[in-house]
Length: 336
Ligand code: KG4
Ligand code: ZN
Image (cartoon, rainbow, N blue to C red; front, side, top):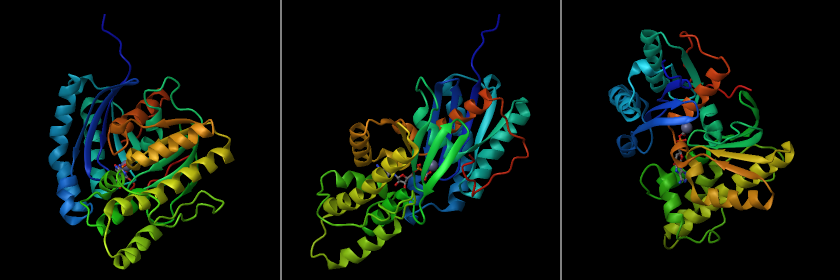
């Protein structure tokens, strides 16, 4: 008799500058590959959409093949194909979505259109015994800063988001002002390790605004005004002080959201959740307030296809699939 296995999903993520493919079987990650384009965009100091889509076209087939090889599977052994359909860069989303639809057509298997934000939001629950459960979710990435009340899988309430720059964008812009290589986030984080976070006073915008909105663009402006006034530039102190301002606001608002919603679990995700100071401070505050903290595994923090595959497996388990006519949507929001 043929051995039964949980549904195997092959997921593709091409919403920005990472070409990523993963295969998930039930709650097991069989393979996950990410081809980063960071080096290609670095000379421009940011992601160039046409460069990104051309490289997705070039890289998707080898990354797909490599992922299948790592999982020791052939395309026929896959039960469903998923792709990020938004939000993101239109021409990048099209590459991954078209590929997944094509694979679904030729194999006669279902296609699932996945929201990139839902991927980030639920990534901290992957591999946990309880799976998705009520929590306050903080998604902090290069494109988004969201606080979300998670009721259950598929039931979300947006509590607040940034009014201007995302947290990761603030890191990247400040990194650029300080002359650090792109992307600024990891470099600022690294330099801040040896710095004095109390040396410079950066604004904690909206920290007591009474709502769950964020504003990070003032930080970049503060840095721009501060730099010409300094006799000497001490990068570690500048990085640590700036980072502390971002982290303090993120942690304070998350705590306020947990109190307002009565949630006992905090789920932290997105590229900025790799930040060592954010992880440390969030751990400290959650422990002090008897909140359980779930942080996405490091490989699932920055853009990856495993988080997309995870949402796809949950959708399949709920009997959901998408029509092949489902369009990409660069401005897709988190549905609740
Ligand atoms: O989730 P992600 O890969 O892509 C988006 O969906 O935007 O997040 C990328 C962002 C970039 O802004 C990057 O600078 C930031 O995450 N990031 C960090 C760290 N690692 C990545 N920011 C601060 N500290 C880090 N260690
Ligand atoms: Zn992302």
